Image 1 (cartoon, rainbow, N blue to C red):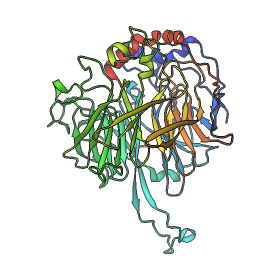
Image 2 (cartoon, helix red, strand yellow):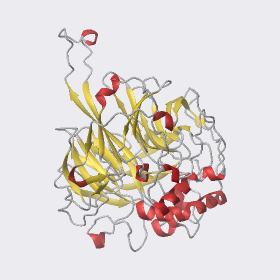
Image 3 (cartoon, one colour):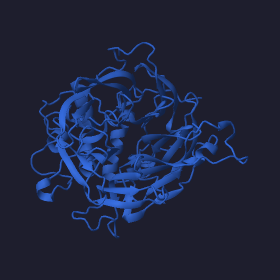
Image 4 (cartoon, one colour):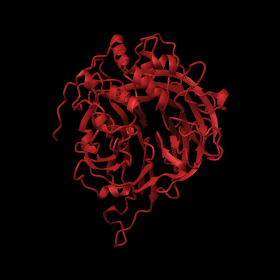
Length: 542
Protein backbone atom coordinates (compact mmCIF):
# COMPACT_ATOMS: atom_id res chain seq x y z
CA UNK A 1 0.00 0.00 0.00
CA UNK A 2 1.37 3.41 -0.98
CA UNK A 3 1.26 6.20 1.58
CA UNK A 4 2.15 9.83 1.43
CA UNK A 5 5.39 10.10 3.37
CA UNK A 6 5.50 12.18 6.53
CA UNK A 7 6.47 15.79 6.02
CA UNK A 8 7.77 18.03 8.81
CA UNK A 9 4.90 20.37 9.60
CA UNK A 10 5.56 24.08 9.78
CA UNK A 11 4.39 26.07 12.79
CA UNK A 12 1.35 27.17 10.78
CA UNK A 13 0.45 23.58 10.04
CA UNK A 14 1.18 22.37 13.55
CA UNK A 15 -1.22 24.93 15.00
CA UNK A 16 -3.94 24.13 12.48
CA UNK A 17 -6.06 22.40 15.09
CA UNK A 18 -6.04 25.49 17.31
CA UNK A 19 -6.83 27.80 14.38
CA UNK A 20 -9.71 25.55 13.39
CA UNK A 21 -11.22 25.99 16.84
CA UNK A 22 -10.66 29.74 16.68
CA UNK A 23 -12.22 29.96 13.23
CA UNK A 24 -15.29 28.12 14.44
CA UNK A 25 -15.69 30.52 17.35
CA UNK A 26 -15.58 33.50 15.01
CA UNK A 27 -17.48 32.23 12.00
CA UNK A 28 -19.56 29.29 13.23
CA UNK A 29 -19.87 26.08 11.21
CA UNK A 30 -18.62 26.45 7.67
CA UNK A 31 -17.44 24.42 4.73
CA UNK A 32 -14.00 22.88 4.90
CA UNK A 33 -12.42 25.44 2.57
CA UNK A 34 -12.85 28.06 5.33
CA UNK A 35 -10.26 26.28 7.48
CA UNK A 36 -6.48 25.90 7.17
CA UNK A 37 -5.19 22.47 6.18
CA UNK A 38 -4.31 19.76 8.62
CA UNK A 39 -0.67 18.63 8.69
CA UNK A 40 0.14 15.79 6.36
CA UNK A 41 -0.60 12.51 8.19
CA UNK A 42 2.28 10.99 10.07
CA UNK A 43 2.88 7.48 8.75
CA UNK A 44 4.33 4.53 10.66
CA UNK A 45 6.33 2.69 11.68
CA UNK A 46 6.54 5.02 14.67
CA UNK A 47 9.78 5.31 16.66
CA UNK A 48 8.24 5.52 20.14
CA UNK A 49 6.90 1.96 20.30
CA UNK A 50 7.40 -0.59 23.05
CA UNK A 51 5.90 -4.10 23.29
CA UNK A 52 3.47 -3.23 20.46
CA UNK A 53 3.43 -3.96 16.76
CA UNK A 54 1.82 -1.72 14.13
CA UNK A 55 0.25 -4.16 11.66
CA UNK A 56 -1.18 -1.57 9.28
CA UNK A 57 -2.41 2.00 9.03
CA UNK A 58 -5.19 3.43 6.86
CA UNK A 59 -5.14 7.18 6.31
CA UNK A 60 -8.38 9.14 6.83
CA UNK A 61 -8.98 9.52 3.09
CA UNK A 62 -8.60 5.75 2.66
CA UNK A 63 -11.55 5.03 4.96
CA UNK A 64 -14.06 7.50 3.59
CA UNK A 65 -13.02 10.65 5.44
CA UNK A 66 -12.30 12.09 2.04
CA UNK A 67 -12.28 15.74 3.15
CA UNK A 68 -11.49 17.38 6.49
CA UNK A 69 -15.07 18.62 6.77
CA UNK A 70 -14.92 21.85 8.79
CA UNK A 71 -11.62 20.62 10.17
CA UNK A 72 -13.08 17.27 11.28
CA UNK A 73 -11.45 13.94 10.51
CA UNK A 74 -11.64 10.89 12.86
CA UNK A 75 -13.29 10.62 16.27
CA UNK A 76 -14.43 7.58 18.29
CA UNK A 77 -14.23 3.88 17.43
CA UNK A 78 -15.88 0.55 18.29
CA UNK A 79 -15.66 -2.99 16.96
CA UNK A 80 -17.95 -5.82 15.91
CA UNK A 81 -17.39 -9.52 15.23
CA UNK A 82 -19.85 -11.27 12.92
CA UNK A 83 -21.15 -14.81 13.60
CA UNK A 84 -18.77 -16.04 10.91
CA UNK A 85 -15.79 -14.56 12.76
CA UNK A 86 -15.23 -11.52 10.54
CA UNK A 87 -14.00 -8.51 12.56
CA UNK A 88 -14.93 -4.93 11.73
CA UNK A 89 -13.65 -1.60 12.98
CA UNK A 90 -16.47 0.97 13.14
CA UNK A 91 -14.81 4.38 12.97
CA UNK A 92 -16.46 7.75 13.51
CA UNK A 93 -15.42 10.45 11.04
CA UNK A 94 -16.59 13.87 9.92
CA UNK A 95 -18.25 12.15 6.95
CA UNK A 96 -20.01 9.36 8.88
CA UNK A 97 -19.26 5.93 10.32
CA UNK A 98 -16.50 4.20 8.40
CA UNK A 99 -16.45 0.38 8.24
CA UNK A 100 -13.16 -1.51 7.90
CA UNK A 101 -12.80 -5.30 7.88
CA UNK A 102 -9.80 -6.19 10.04
CA UNK A 103 -10.13 -10.00 10.14
CA UNK A 104 -6.70 -10.08 8.51
CA UNK A 105 -5.11 -7.28 10.54
CA UNK A 106 -2.09 -7.11 8.25
CA UNK A 107 -4.41 -6.30 5.34
CA UNK A 108 -7.42 -4.26 6.56
CA UNK A 109 -10.12 -3.64 3.95
CA UNK A 110 -12.28 -0.53 3.74
CA UNK A 111 -15.88 -1.68 3.12
CA UNK A 112 -17.70 1.64 2.97
CA UNK A 113 -19.03 4.50 5.06
CA UNK A 114 -22.48 5.11 6.48
CA UNK A 115 -22.78 8.84 5.73
CA UNK A 116 -23.91 11.53 8.12
CA UNK A 117 -26.75 13.69 6.70
CA UNK A 118 -24.98 16.82 7.97
CA UNK A 119 -21.39 16.43 6.69
CA UNK A 120 -20.45 20.12 6.71
CA UNK A 121 -21.29 20.79 10.37
CA UNK A 122 -18.35 21.37 12.72
CA UNK A 123 -20.26 19.48 15.42
CA UNK A 124 -19.35 16.24 13.60
CA UNK A 125 -16.11 16.64 15.52
CA UNK A 126 -17.86 14.56 18.21
CA UNK A 127 -19.13 11.13 17.22
CA UNK A 128 -19.74 7.89 19.07
CA UNK A 129 -20.80 4.31 18.31
CA UNK A 130 -22.69 1.66 20.24
CA UNK A 131 -23.43 -1.92 19.13
CA UNK A 132 -26.29 -4.25 20.08
CA UNK A 133 -26.37 -7.96 19.19
CA UNK A 134 -29.70 -9.82 18.94
CA UNK A 135 -29.37 -13.59 19.27
CA UNK A 136 -31.32 -15.84 16.89
CA UNK A 137 -31.42 -19.60 16.15
CA UNK A 138 -28.91 -20.54 13.48
CA UNK A 139 -30.76 -21.00 10.16
CA UNK A 140 -30.57 -24.49 8.74
CA UNK A 141 -29.12 -25.29 5.34
CA UNK A 142 -31.47 -26.33 2.51
CA UNK A 143 -30.74 -30.01 3.22
CA UNK A 144 -32.01 -29.66 6.76
CA UNK A 145 -28.72 -29.80 8.64
CA UNK A 146 -25.81 -27.51 9.41
CA UNK A 147 -23.42 -29.13 6.97
CA UNK A 148 -19.77 -28.76 7.93
CA UNK A 149 -20.78 -26.72 10.98
CA UNK A 150 -22.91 -29.49 12.52
CA UNK A 151 -22.04 -30.09 16.15
CA UNK A 152 -20.15 -26.80 16.61
CA UNK A 153 -23.18 -24.94 18.02
CA UNK A 154 -21.70 -21.49 17.64
CA UNK A 155 -24.20 -18.65 18.27
CA UNK A 156 -25.99 -16.84 15.52
CA UNK A 157 -26.95 -13.22 15.99
CA UNK A 158 -27.71 -10.00 14.17
CA UNK A 159 -25.78 -6.89 15.12
CA UNK A 160 -26.88 -3.27 14.94
CA UNK A 161 -24.63 -0.21 15.15
CA UNK A 162 -25.88 3.13 16.47
CA UNK A 163 -23.90 6.19 15.38
CA UNK A 164 -24.35 9.53 17.12
CA UNK A 165 -22.96 12.91 16.20
CA UNK A 166 -23.45 16.35 17.67
CA UNK A 167 -24.53 17.80 14.32
CA UNK A 168 -28.06 19.09 14.87
CA UNK A 169 -30.63 17.17 12.86
CA UNK A 170 -28.38 14.20 12.11
CA UNK A 171 -30.39 11.75 14.21
CA UNK A 172 -28.92 8.40 15.25
CA UNK A 173 -27.83 6.43 12.21
CA UNK A 174 -28.65 2.72 12.63
CA UNK A 175 -26.91 0.08 10.52
CA UNK A 176 -27.82 -3.62 10.28
CA UNK A 177 -24.36 -5.15 10.55
CA UNK A 178 -25.40 -8.60 9.30
CA UNK A 179 -24.98 -7.38 5.72
CA UNK A 180 -21.28 -6.59 6.10
CA UNK A 181 -19.98 -10.11 5.44
CA UNK A 182 -21.46 -9.86 1.94
CA UNK A 183 -19.48 -6.72 1.04
CA UNK A 184 -16.18 -6.85 -0.78
CA UNK A 185 -13.66 -4.01 -0.80
CA UNK A 186 -15.20 -0.60 -1.45
CA UNK A 187 -14.97 0.34 -5.14
CA UNK A 188 -13.70 3.81 -4.19
CA UNK A 189 -12.71 5.76 -1.07
CA UNK A 190 -16.07 7.54 -0.73
CA UNK A 191 -18.27 4.45 -1.19
CA UNK A 192 -21.40 4.82 0.93
CA UNK A 193 -23.53 2.25 2.72
CA UNK A 194 -26.86 3.90 3.56
CA UNK A 195 -28.21 3.62 7.12
CA UNK A 196 -30.82 0.92 7.64
CA UNK A 197 -32.83 3.36 9.78
CA UNK A 198 -32.47 6.76 11.44
CA UNK A 199 -33.76 7.50 14.95
CA UNK A 200 -35.38 10.94 15.32
CA UNK A 201 -38.09 10.39 17.92
CA UNK A 202 -38.97 12.50 20.96
CA UNK A 203 -37.57 15.71 19.50
CA UNK A 204 -34.11 14.14 19.21
CA UNK A 205 -31.60 16.35 17.40
CA UNK A 206 -28.13 15.11 18.32
CA UNK A 207 -26.04 13.62 21.13
CA UNK A 208 -22.49 13.37 22.38
CA UNK A 209 -22.19 9.74 23.44
CA UNK A 210 -24.03 6.43 23.41
CA UNK A 211 -23.49 3.28 25.47
CA UNK A 212 -25.36 0.00 24.93
CA UNK A 213 -25.79 -2.47 27.77
CA UNK A 214 -25.77 -5.70 25.79
CA UNK A 215 -27.16 -7.73 28.69
CA UNK A 216 -30.35 -5.67 29.08
CA UNK A 217 -30.84 -4.30 25.56
CA UNK A 218 -30.99 -0.65 26.65
CA UNK A 219 -29.04 2.18 25.01
CA UNK A 220 -28.04 5.20 27.08
CA UNK A 221 -27.70 8.38 25.00
CA UNK A 222 -26.03 11.25 26.86
CA UNK A 223 -25.46 14.89 26.04
CA UNK A 224 -28.62 14.71 23.95
CA UNK A 225 -29.95 17.85 22.32
CA UNK A 226 -33.72 18.09 21.92
CA UNK A 227 -35.67 20.42 19.65
CA UNK A 228 -36.84 23.75 21.05
CA UNK A 229 -39.85 24.19 18.79
CA UNK A 230 -41.68 20.88 19.16
CA UNK A 231 -42.87 18.44 21.81
CA UNK A 232 -40.06 16.32 23.23
CA UNK A 233 -39.65 13.31 25.49
CA UNK A 234 -38.42 15.56 28.32
CA UNK A 235 -41.20 18.16 28.27
CA UNK A 236 -42.74 16.99 31.55
CA UNK A 237 -39.47 17.40 33.47
CA UNK A 238 -38.37 20.54 35.33
CA UNK A 239 -35.30 22.44 34.10
CA UNK A 240 -35.76 21.00 30.61
CA UNK A 241 -32.96 22.39 28.42
CA UNK A 242 -32.33 21.89 24.75
CA UNK A 243 -28.98 20.15 25.48
CA UNK A 244 -27.40 17.88 28.09
CA UNK A 245 -30.31 15.45 28.39
CA UNK A 246 -30.01 11.68 28.84
CA UNK A 247 -32.29 9.37 26.86
CA UNK A 248 -32.73 5.67 27.61
CA UNK A 249 -33.81 3.64 24.59
CA UNK A 250 -35.26 0.12 24.60
CA UNK A 251 -33.69 -1.76 21.69
CA UNK A 252 -35.09 -5.20 22.40
CA UNK A 253 -38.47 -5.22 20.66
CA UNK A 254 -37.31 -3.47 17.49
CA UNK A 255 -33.62 -2.50 17.22
CA UNK A 256 -34.37 -0.42 14.11
CA UNK A 257 -37.10 1.55 15.86
CA UNK A 258 -35.96 2.10 19.48
CA UNK A 259 -38.50 3.19 22.08
CA UNK A 260 -37.73 6.01 24.49
CA UNK A 261 -38.41 4.64 27.97
CA UNK A 262 -36.90 7.48 29.99
CA UNK A 263 -35.75 11.05 29.45
CA UNK A 264 -33.62 12.67 32.15
CA UNK A 265 -33.61 16.42 31.59
CA UNK A 266 -30.22 18.03 32.18
CA UNK A 267 -29.28 15.06 34.37
CA UNK A 268 -26.10 13.44 33.06
CA UNK A 269 -24.09 15.37 30.54
CA UNK A 270 -20.96 13.72 29.23
CA UNK A 271 -20.51 9.92 29.28
CA UNK A 272 -21.90 6.78 30.90
CA UNK A 273 -20.93 3.14 31.54
CA UNK A 274 -23.70 0.70 32.49
CA UNK A 275 -23.39 -2.81 33.97
CA UNK A 276 -25.48 -5.58 35.44
CA UNK A 277 -23.95 -5.33 38.88
CA UNK A 278 -22.02 -8.35 40.19
CA UNK A 279 -20.00 -6.55 42.83
CA UNK A 280 -19.66 -7.02 46.58
CA UNK A 281 -22.32 -4.48 47.60
CA UNK A 282 -25.25 -6.80 48.38
CA UNK A 283 -27.74 -3.93 48.37
CA UNK A 284 -27.39 -3.65 44.59
CA UNK A 285 -26.29 -7.07 43.39
CA UNK A 286 -28.23 -8.10 40.29
CA UNK A 287 -29.42 -4.56 39.55
CA UNK A 288 -28.58 -2.42 36.51
CA UNK A 289 -26.08 0.20 37.65
CA UNK A 290 -24.80 3.23 35.70
CA UNK A 291 -21.54 5.05 36.32
CA UNK A 292 -22.07 8.59 35.08
CA UNK A 293 -19.27 11.00 34.18
CA UNK A 294 -20.89 14.38 34.43
CA UNK A 295 -18.09 16.64 33.33
CA UNK A 296 -18.19 19.65 35.60
CA UNK A 297 -19.83 20.25 38.97
CA UNK A 298 -23.50 20.56 39.75
CA UNK A 299 -25.06 23.57 41.44
CA UNK A 300 -27.29 21.58 43.76
CA UNK A 301 -28.56 24.55 45.74
CA UNK A 302 -30.06 26.55 42.89
CA UNK A 303 -31.21 23.74 40.60
CA UNK A 304 -32.28 20.99 42.97
CA UNK A 305 -29.34 18.81 41.96
CA UNK A 306 -29.72 19.44 38.23
CA UNK A 307 -26.70 20.09 36.01
CA UNK A 308 -25.74 23.64 35.06
CA UNK A 309 -23.02 24.71 32.67
CA UNK A 310 -21.56 27.67 34.55
CA UNK A 311 -21.54 26.71 38.22
CA UNK A 312 -21.40 29.87 40.37
CA UNK A 313 -19.38 30.11 43.53
CA UNK A 314 -16.28 28.16 44.48
CA UNK A 315 -14.59 26.13 41.80
CA UNK A 316 -14.28 22.41 42.28
CA UNK A 317 -13.81 19.41 40.06
CA UNK A 318 -15.94 17.24 37.83
CA UNK A 319 -18.75 15.26 39.35
CA UNK A 320 -19.05 11.47 39.00
CA UNK A 321 -22.28 9.72 39.95
CA UNK A 322 -23.56 6.17 40.42
CA UNK A 323 -27.20 5.52 39.49
CA UNK A 324 -29.57 2.61 39.95
CA UNK A 325 -31.29 2.45 36.55
CA UNK A 326 -33.10 -0.85 37.04
CA UNK A 327 -36.49 0.86 37.09
CA UNK A 328 -36.42 3.27 34.16
CA UNK A 329 -39.38 5.19 35.59
CA UNK A 330 -37.70 5.71 38.96
CA UNK A 331 -33.95 6.21 38.52
CA UNK A 332 -32.12 6.78 41.79
CA UNK A 333 -28.78 8.50 42.41
CA UNK A 334 -26.88 6.15 44.72
CA UNK A 335 -23.91 8.48 45.22
CA UNK A 336 -22.43 11.66 43.81
CA UNK A 337 -18.77 12.46 44.41
CA UNK A 338 -15.84 14.59 43.29
CA UNK A 339 -12.42 12.95 43.17
CA UNK A 340 -9.55 15.06 44.61
CA UNK A 341 -7.61 16.81 41.87
CA UNK A 342 -10.02 16.04 39.06
CA UNK A 343 -11.01 18.80 36.63
CA UNK A 344 -13.44 17.18 34.20
CA UNK A 345 -14.97 13.76 34.87
CA UNK A 346 -14.78 12.63 31.27
CA UNK A 347 -15.21 8.87 30.93
CA UNK A 348 -14.61 5.62 32.77
CA UNK A 349 -14.83 1.85 33.15
CA UNK A 350 -14.73 -0.68 35.96
CA UNK A 351 -11.43 -2.45 36.52
CA UNK A 352 -13.03 -5.91 36.32
CA UNK A 353 -16.40 -7.60 35.98
CA UNK A 354 -16.45 -7.83 39.77
CA UNK A 355 -17.16 -4.07 39.77
CA UNK A 356 -14.96 -3.34 42.80
CA UNK A 357 -12.95 -0.42 41.37
CA UNK A 358 -13.91 2.41 39.03
CA UNK A 359 -11.33 3.98 36.70
CA UNK A 360 -11.97 7.60 35.62
CA UNK A 361 -10.13 9.69 33.06
CA UNK A 362 -9.93 13.48 33.02
CA UNK A 363 -9.39 15.09 29.62
CA UNK A 364 -8.36 18.48 31.02
CA UNK A 365 -6.46 18.21 34.31
CA UNK A 366 -3.10 18.05 32.52
CA UNK A 367 -3.91 21.28 30.63
CA UNK A 368 -5.01 23.01 33.83
CA UNK A 369 -1.86 22.02 35.69
CA UNK A 370 0.36 23.26 32.84
CA UNK A 371 -1.14 26.76 32.92
CA UNK A 372 0.11 29.88 34.62
CA UNK A 373 -1.78 31.84 37.22
CA UNK A 374 -4.04 33.45 34.59
CA UNK A 375 -4.96 30.15 32.91
CA UNK A 376 -8.56 29.60 31.84
CA UNK A 377 -8.95 26.08 33.22
CA UNK A 378 -7.28 27.10 36.48
CA UNK A 379 -9.41 30.20 37.06
CA UNK A 380 -12.71 29.61 35.30
CA UNK A 381 -13.13 25.87 35.04
CA UNK A 382 -11.85 23.88 37.98
CA UNK A 383 -9.68 24.40 41.02
CA UNK A 384 -6.33 22.82 41.82
CA UNK A 385 -3.83 22.76 44.64
CA UNK A 386 -0.97 22.36 42.17
CA UNK A 387 1.20 25.43 41.60
CA UNK A 388 1.15 27.16 38.19
CA UNK A 389 3.14 25.52 35.38
CA UNK A 390 3.19 22.13 37.06
CA UNK A 391 3.54 19.78 34.11
CA UNK A 392 1.19 16.90 34.79
CA UNK A 393 1.47 13.49 33.18
CA UNK A 394 -1.67 11.83 31.73
CA UNK A 395 -3.40 10.01 34.55
CA UNK A 396 -6.25 7.73 35.60
CA UNK A 397 -8.16 8.18 38.85
CA UNK A 398 -8.75 4.92 40.75
CA UNK A 399 -11.83 4.80 43.00
CA UNK A 400 -12.81 1.98 45.34
CA UNK A 401 -16.55 1.39 44.74
CA UNK A 402 -17.02 -1.81 46.74
CA UNK A 403 -19.59 0.21 48.70
CA UNK A 404 -21.57 2.01 46.00
CA UNK A 405 -23.00 4.44 48.53
CA UNK A 406 -19.54 5.48 49.71
CA UNK A 407 -16.89 5.57 46.94
CA UNK A 408 -13.31 6.02 48.21
CA UNK A 409 -10.52 7.60 46.14
CA UNK A 410 -7.38 5.44 45.99
CA UNK A 411 -4.85 7.16 43.71
CA UNK A 412 -4.12 8.93 40.44
CA UNK A 413 -2.02 6.59 38.29
CA UNK A 414 0.07 8.39 35.64
CA UNK A 415 2.33 7.53 32.72
CA UNK A 416 5.50 9.34 31.70
CA UNK A 417 4.45 11.83 29.02
CA UNK A 418 4.66 15.37 30.43
CA UNK A 419 2.25 17.91 29.00
CA UNK A 420 0.08 15.44 27.06
CA UNK A 421 -3.61 15.03 27.88
CA UNK A 422 -5.56 11.81 27.68
CA UNK A 423 -8.82 10.65 26.13
CA UNK A 424 -10.92 7.46 26.01
CA UNK A 425 -10.02 4.04 27.34
CA UNK A 426 -11.67 0.61 27.44
CA UNK A 427 -10.98 -2.45 29.55
CA UNK A 428 -10.87 -5.96 28.13
CA UNK A 429 -10.05 -8.72 30.60
CA UNK A 430 -7.20 -7.60 32.86
CA UNK A 431 -5.85 -4.94 30.50
CA UNK A 432 -6.79 -1.32 29.96
CA UNK A 433 -6.38 0.08 26.45
CA UNK A 434 -5.95 3.85 26.56
CA UNK A 435 -5.96 6.50 23.79
CA UNK A 436 -3.77 9.35 25.06
CA UNK A 437 -4.14 11.97 22.31
CA UNK A 438 -0.63 13.07 21.25
CA UNK A 439 1.16 10.17 22.92
CA UNK A 440 -0.98 7.50 21.23
CA UNK A 441 -1.84 4.05 22.59
CA UNK A 442 -0.96 3.00 26.13
CA UNK A 443 -1.73 -0.48 27.49
CA UNK A 444 -1.95 -1.05 31.25
CA UNK A 445 -1.94 -4.34 33.16
CA UNK A 446 -4.57 -4.47 35.93
CA UNK A 447 -3.93 -6.53 39.05
CA UNK A 448 -4.75 -6.62 42.77
CA UNK A 449 -2.29 -5.91 45.54
CA UNK A 450 -4.01 -6.71 48.80
CA UNK A 451 -7.16 -4.61 48.96
CA UNK A 452 -5.82 -2.08 46.43
CA UNK A 453 -5.80 -2.03 42.65
CA UNK A 454 -2.49 -1.94 40.83
CA UNK A 455 -1.93 -0.53 37.32
CA UNK A 456 1.28 -1.07 35.37
CA UNK A 457 2.11 0.20 31.90
CA UNK A 458 3.21 -2.68 29.68
CA UNK A 459 3.07 -1.32 26.13
CA UNK A 460 2.79 1.84 24.04
CA UNK A 461 2.67 3.03 20.45
CA UNK A 462 2.84 6.78 19.80
CA UNK A 463 1.09 7.40 16.48
CA UNK A 464 1.58 11.21 16.65
CA UNK A 465 5.35 11.74 16.89
CA UNK A 466 5.25 15.51 16.32
CA UNK A 467 4.86 18.35 18.81
CA UNK A 468 1.36 19.45 17.85
CA UNK A 469 -1.30 21.24 19.95
CA UNK A 470 -3.57 19.55 22.44
CA UNK A 471 -6.49 17.49 21.10
CA UNK A 472 -4.57 15.94 18.18
CA UNK A 473 -3.59 12.26 18.11
CA UNK A 474 -5.65 9.28 19.25
CA UNK A 475 -9.31 9.71 20.17
CA UNK A 476 -10.51 6.16 20.85
CA UNK A 477 -9.42 2.53 20.96
CA UNK A 478 -11.01 -0.93 20.79
CA UNK A 479 -9.47 -4.38 21.48
CA UNK A 480 -11.05 -7.43 19.83
CA UNK A 481 -11.26 -10.04 22.60
CA UNK A 482 -10.72 -13.18 20.52
CA UNK A 483 -8.10 -12.22 17.93
CA UNK A 484 -6.34 -9.71 20.23
CA UNK A 485 -6.25 -7.22 17.37
CA UNK A 486 -6.32 -3.61 18.61
CA UNK A 487 -7.73 -0.76 16.53
CA UNK A 488 -7.39 2.93 17.37
CA UNK A 489 -8.69 6.10 15.74
CA UNK A 490 -6.08 8.81 15.31
CA UNK A 491 -7.77 12.13 14.51
CA UNK A 492 -5.31 13.23 11.84
CA UNK A 493 -3.33 10.08 11.05
CA UNK A 494 -6.07 7.51 10.45
CA UNK A 495 -6.90 4.00 11.63
CA UNK A 496 -4.16 2.18 13.50
CA UNK A 497 -4.28 -1.64 13.50
CA UNK A 498 -2.03 -3.07 16.21
CA UNK A 499 -1.26 -6.02 18.42
CA UNK A 500 0.63 -6.50 21.66
CA UNK A 501 4.15 -7.87 21.12
CA UNK A 502 5.68 -8.72 24.45
CA UNK A 503 8.42 -11.01 23.18
CA UNK A 504 10.96 -8.77 24.92
CA UNK A 505 9.24 -9.08 28.29
CA UNK A 506 6.85 -7.01 30.33
CA UNK A 507 9.25 -4.30 31.45
CA UNK A 508 8.95 -0.94 29.74
CA UNK A 509 12.06 0.92 28.64
CA UNK A 510 12.52 4.29 30.28
CA UNK A 511 13.60 6.18 27.16
CA UNK A 512 11.22 8.03 24.86
CA UNK A 513 11.84 8.85 21.23
CA UNK A 514 9.78 12.03 21.49
CA UNK A 515 11.38 14.61 23.74
CA UNK A 516 9.13 15.59 26.63
CA UNK A 517 8.33 19.32 26.50
CA UNK A 518 9.38 21.53 29.38
CA UNK A 519 7.18 23.99 31.25
CA UNK A 520 8.16 26.98 29.09
CA UNK A 521 7.37 25.11 25.87
CA UNK A 522 3.99 24.05 27.21
CA UNK A 523 3.24 27.62 28.30
CA UNK A 524 4.05 28.96 24.82
CA UNK A 525 1.91 26.30 23.18
CA UNK A 526 -1.05 26.96 25.46
CA UNK A 527 -0.78 30.73 24.98
CA UNK A 528 -1.38 30.30 21.25
CA UNK A 529 -4.70 28.55 21.89
CA UNK A 530 -5.85 30.10 25.18
CA UNK A 531 -8.27 32.69 23.81
CA UNK A 532 -9.91 30.24 21.42
CA UNK A 533 -10.10 27.48 24.02
CA UNK A 534 -11.65 29.84 26.55
CA UNK A 535 -14.66 30.58 24.36
CA UNK A 536 -14.72 27.04 23.03
CA UNK A 537 -15.03 25.40 26.42
CA UNK A 538 -17.38 28.01 27.79
CA UNK A 539 -19.81 27.42 24.94
CA UNK A 540 -19.53 23.70 24.22
CA UNK A 541 -17.32 21.71 26.55
CA UNK A 542 -17.50 18.03 25.56
